[in-house]
Length: 433
Image (cartoon, rainbow, N blue to C red; front, side):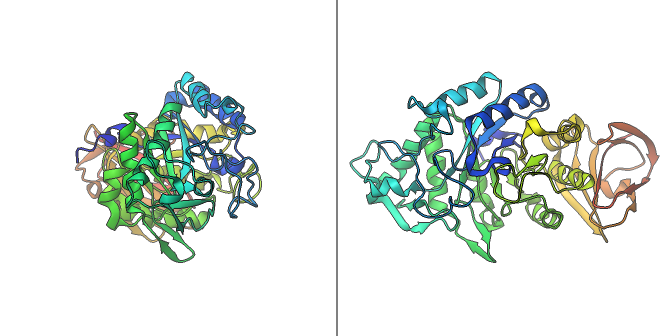
């Protein structure tokens, strides 16, 4: 396709996002604590992004009030959101996120932020000038095009040249801060309340142009979802990852629904552009978050393995949602298995291979001519599965390696039979023996 942005995420991005554990009340210390943990424990496995989600500009945002119109949001003279010094003391001198990004970069990691589509309503109300133009924010505001679940941002008239100028101005600011990753929200299609809400074509293209105008590579993630496959070409042309579902939380039934979405989107995966079934709600979540109370993930151990196996074989972006310093040993093992992560980062052509009752099979190609094979059991009882090598394009004897236990199972002629626990998954590498 030739788009330069595809080179910025040649493998699915791996990192941490603040939403599942801290919601709109995330602070500078929260970010530093998790960045420190990644640098000390996970960087060597490929985890690198540290992303500040919604609310970094809103001093008094809480889970109870942030969706209501009238929320205080801090802006500069050009109507651009700026970090709240109460939450992010590093920004008190007017340098925005520059110091926090420098801290993250100093750990050998990359820094990201969440933004809402459009402009804060304060920019229009205060008639802030659009940087580099004679227009004001009020003149390019589209108040009727308001986010359905966050009333404090409004759309932009992209028929006006100053609309692009506004987007250029905010991404110029992010480039000055040293931002490496932007999660743009309320811009992809949204499947909510039984309805499909708009896909904002003009503003997606404006964001792409704005990023490119800065000269700084910034990985672009589009939210929420579910994205529609009829937009696949447009999504790949403009973004590095895009949500294929609404917000995903630690619920077994929700996890089962992700299989159909991954199956739908698997044919559209290309290098640099990744369908995204959302974050990994694992470890300690809900500390000050959006859904539920503070807890260890509701996913049972087998379900956690299923989640990581599906995201890995599908080549989904891996954005961990829990508070990493609060992780237990089992959680750390789940996200630091180099052989499982290699399936996510190095596997090719992931595809589902059918279903037998509650058992589902997926595969992807390995660089040495073998196959990664994932078998899932969505049922409530343990089940036996026979893996026939011919079903995965292999002939004759194959060496089988169990990637979760990191052990060689042995060489098998034509087939291999094993058990899959209830709600669990097995992940193997098959090589020609």
